Length: 89
Image 1: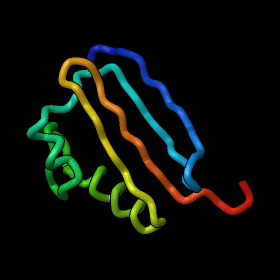
Image 2: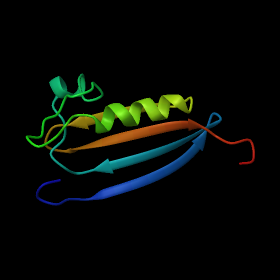
Image 3: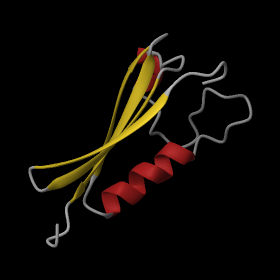
Image 4: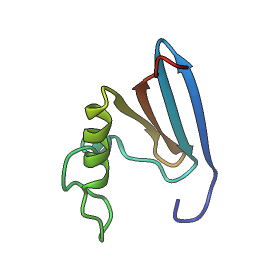
């Protein structure tokens, strides 16, 4: 969020999963970029390496989870990480 904005987190439990949602009111992600953001070496930033989201996705999948993203250019983005809930919860 280069010019500021709001950042919110939410944790939910349902269907045997824990979902962690991170939402911002930043610039959003274009539809074209949404299809590529989890690819290694893809970045929209001049100084970016494009590995952060690719590594994050691999870690989440290693834990039998999934990561999803929704975005509206000019309005913001939500990332949701779903992981199996521990039996003790």
